[in-house]
Image (cartoon, rainbow over all chains, first blue to last red; front, side):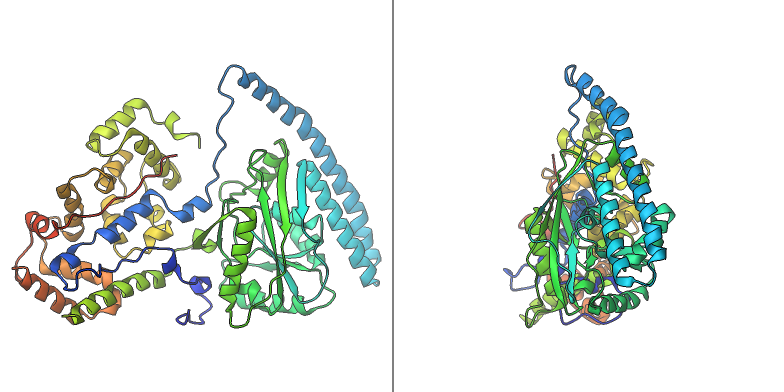
Length: 371
Length: 175
């Protein structure tokens, strides 16, 4: 889009032609002469507004659809009760034990390695990577995670980033158990934040803060530095910027696509029959989310490592981002919506409304000139 | 957040159906209730302006603030009654009534030249000058047999907007 300005505080920099997705409000071209009726008839605009009140594609992305209740009849209800007893009384304690064992092993190995091998960086890094992969495997086991990985495993090469669609923070854990990525994440409070600042820091993870507008430049710089370093862990980015409910993808932020390196897409799809893995961060804390996973039957998902993509000649980073989003959405069976994920936290920029106004105004003026 | 029909009784559905003159089917009313609960985040019984504006597709509509005035703070029954103008069944006058209300901001039953200019301003923003808007509107009013000073009444709107029929239908997703 030629009209994009370079101001860093605008949220809609990452959005290509939204008019392709939304209906436009211009006049009918079948009547060459402009009549009073054409100006008075605001029904298309009103219909769009009412349509948005009744159903809109943005809210649908963050709706956790509860599964159909199946336990309502006299045969199935006792079965369901038995299931609850097994899940909470048998599986959950077993899983909690597995997870605690994992943590004990991890912590007792991690701290000695971290402090004693301070001088031997290469060895220390390798051991730390192995240990992080180990604790992630314990996590996945604690939800009885059944993960099928398709495609070639990520390799450690410079000048490449990995991008994936985002459903929950467990995406990171599931990918991490296979490869120790360095990820770029929102800094969280609580025990998660503690883990972030100690263990994940050593992997080379990068933190950002959604609410700070200047943050974008700092983060962009850190991304570039990381990718150019030969020794750094492969970088994993979730370009949606927020958790989406695994039925849709929102627009990808272009930051990952303008680093001048190869982008390797990863698609993740959870099987909802077992559990709905969508983490609605406004409704649940991460701890509640984990507990919910640990008291379900299993977490079943597919992970596809897709073919690495490069910026095509003449392609802008935004088009590149859309192309990769297309590849991921097709592979994981997700529908695309034209909204920026950050609209969860803020209002749309007035530019979009202005585009609609502009197209209507131009259409009126055009009809006038035809007299 | 259980299923909607467990909270809405059959009596409630029939009452709402009555209130909206049977313009929505019972299934559509149930779907609308689910949507209402989805937008009304803390179950207050009405949807606040802020919650409407959190729907980006609504927020970027040029006429959203006018509709917002009409729909802000409505309870579910009135919400459905408001949306019934957008169902598949209303008569032409029922549809025109909502258009008239959007124009008639001071609710005195008359739409003046300045009301018309204001709505045209919302629709065109800064892409037409005030002078251009005035010119276009005066010219079109004149051609239709009105003047700048005349106030349009509801019947005038019906006359002007009659042909060839108003398309103003919104589909309620029914699962």
